[in-house]
Length: 301
Figure: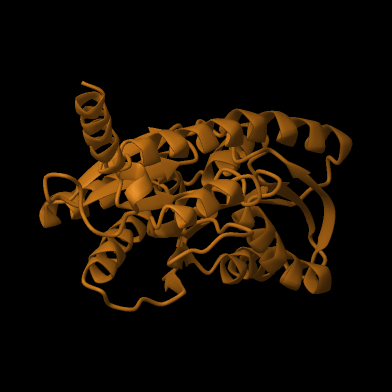
């Protein structure tokens, strides 16, 4: 009897040892249980039309290739984004595509994906640490320079300008600000730079406060279109307003004589490029560490 019990115990132990770990812990870069490639997409906010277009472009490209996409919206909350990504990993994704809310805060999530062998692709904003297969974005520095140079060309050197900055800590905020400063410090009088967190209502309120304190402002450069459109509601008609993104609302505003210009990105192409990169990785091909998507300046002319 004792021998029988010992034999049964060994069988149970052996069976327990053969159990596979959960899907998320097995590593990504292959395919889901049914053979399909599963992409987890974490977006900073779907309250911004730019990122909605990015998501739609990615989903459309994934559908063409037969890939599954799981989307989560961080709602501009870095803590929520960290939790969202953990949830995606537990659902068994093969690739993680992230548009970071905060480039530093999301680093731990990228490192967790690295530990689980899930390839990571970042869109529009980079991360400060962790291994990323590729970073897909516009040349934000060049775009900031483009916006500043437009103001110089329209108003001349020495024009008084206010800068509306994006979310503190986001790489897009740093890079667009850097590009703007490259031109502005030599050719413009930047009266103030204040954050409006890439948000339209904050853009309106911050602009109101800026204009009350500095009624001689001649132009406003915003790090994205949402803030620019908010600023437009507060600014007098003779104040030049320049945005960044090329969202549908911004393009329509430019065409209708509202915004004076927007540095236009191609968010749908960013999404498509992310899926193309997944396909390359899936096929064992090497990819560029950084992929730049072309920019253009949309103006009223």
